[in-house]
Image (cartoon, rainbow, N blue to C red):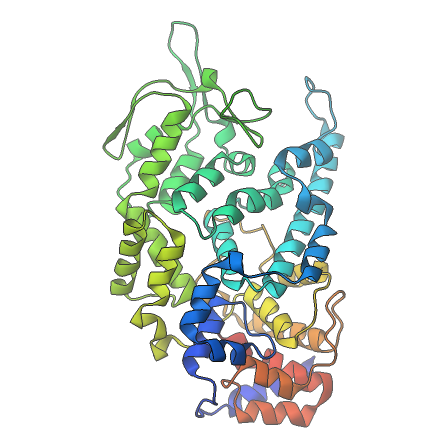
Length: 482
């Protein structure tokens, strides 16, 4: 690995600016930003169809068909076909309904939860690497961080995969209001962010004994909707927490309950509330729906989501006029995520050369793009999940309210670069179980990645030859940028 690192460093120091090859830089940019990275022949295929047609196709993922072998690999993961309720029944604590699970039962839950979480990570990686629905997969990853469950154990970790399947994936390119409602009611979010214990206890005709927990309400306002600079005040956080009292996890008790969520009217604050200056009539579960719709349609939410999307797809510090126009598209479309993205991708700023090829890949992008570049067919991604942990981005482990950093600068650390070089060497040499390319050549990899791979890097790789030469390309600066 030391020799490989020296070769990569030599490529970095010898790098000189060169004219791009035959592929239009706009094509390279679109593929770099709307996918996890090109596959062999991918740039040529996109160039043949044109950037606009490619963007339109990615915005309509239902028209793109996954390879049958990918469906077979996903079907081999037992928990991928289980919803939240079934996961609890088969992997949850095996105790009597009226008993509290003891330490041994909870340890078993933790162990089973790790199995389910690993299968969810393997499935996400499989789709990210081999599905043609690349933009959709990038948006799934985006929303999983935006609605981060944090680093969890127990039931919240057991349900990380079902949270992604049930709350995120159906709405990743749909309406933000639907996405917000689905995440708010999902048992994984209720437990992970504490809203399941946000209750009031009525005492007959006397006063209520409050057990208000504003943790989730504060996060919902400051991160998931209005943003940290939004108009919310402490009174709004408390009002929203009261609106969301009685949202519980358990068996259905009414027509509105499903998927492990139920509304307990006896633990709900029935009083009228005021949220952001808007009256919310005490009406039980309907209060929560009204509050979420209010937040989803708020101009501050449009600005917050627009800026996050611009950071994710364009630049760490996106231009304010672009963010304003994307926010306007979000508002005018009623929070339609697809139309919001269309406005971003059709903007002149999106194709500004100063934003092309200058971002440092987060570990997930680095790992997925490297595997895609080799052209290897669908395999087992368990080892790749371990690689991500070693690179500092393990699935479902970001403890902050916004998940892992979207800004690329957060990942530019010298020790991390060394680990990436090691990963490149292991991948090229076929040392990663389940994902073993068929001896990719440096020349083929350079052609796949595109014209940004300059002659100096290629020359060093060709001189090294074999797996080391392939690793030089995979670990080169051009391969770590997008």
